[in-house]
Length: 312
Ligand SMILES: CCCC(=O)SCCNC(=O)CCNC(=O)[C@H](O)C(C)(C)COP(=O)(O)OP(=O)(O)OC[C@H]1O[C@@H](n2cnc3c(N)ncnc32)[C@H](O)[C@@H]1OP(=O)(O)O
Image (cartoon, rainbow, N blue to C red; front, side, top):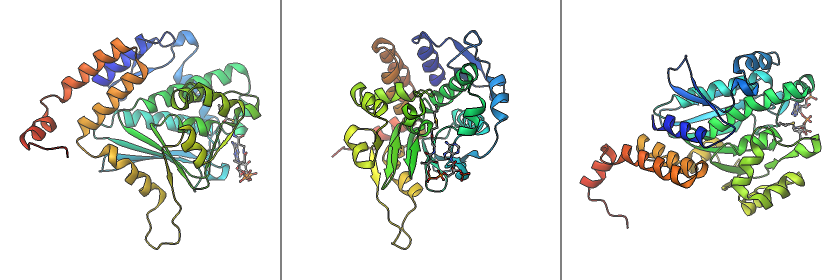
């Protein structure tokens, strides 16, 4: 419910967002960024996108409370077909309703992240109207991905290009494997980001760095990623050691420092950070109070008090 309240506040505080929608399938409130007055009819867009099939977006929810979301279209370097965009939105809905969740790893299949939108689909829907509809659909899905009450990390192996680079910015953290590249190639395609990637990139690396990365379509390798603050860590390749952990296991290990602990506390941490990131100060403070109220005197708090824990 706090998440719904946060979403409501986020909508109120944003002039471009005006709609609170009810999801009949889940019975739980969730928000769309755009409304019908802005030409956003989600079901109509879904149907259009489904006309461009191929690949899938797969979700594995684990008992540990950490899920793995895999962009799966290896024949096209994990480019997003239309049906994969619909898949993504559906998987985000499932995660919005995952009450036991704490963390999320977002990755690509076959050791590469994602090469953006499927250029075959892009060519077929190249009219400005259709492009805007796809843009609204993906902005909505990726904004909701970032707003999940889960701590998320993009595991970047191989290439994250165009929309793939934008997808990395819809996670709280980015881990880059040795040899990987994040590149906002939009300029070379005569485009700018349209999936919310520019707005998020400015938040992550600041406007100067964002201008350099977008304006120069710069290839960001792990070293540069750490330098500008786009990457939060680098995963070393360890193929030669028998029994070495896989990149997904390494990402889960890395994430554990943030996901260890009771679900309500981890979710509360994400919610207060989200409020601070997206709301004006007074609203963020009010939201922090609301979230605080859900953990104060709750089982994890009482247990910690009873154990007289010291923080040495
Ligand atoms: C708002 C969203 C904006 C966007 O996302 S626009 C799209 C931006 N992305 C791109 O322009 C990526 C274009 N692709 C490339 O640069 C290269 O294919 C890439 C990813 C560097 C990989 O190069 P290589 O390792 O040499 O492999 P390759 O070119 O032979 O690719 C293997 C097969 O994958 C296909 N592929 C890669 N990216 C694709 C895409 N985005 N849409 C559709 N198909 C794509 C490529 O055509 C090739 O297929 P095929 O084997 O020739 O049938």
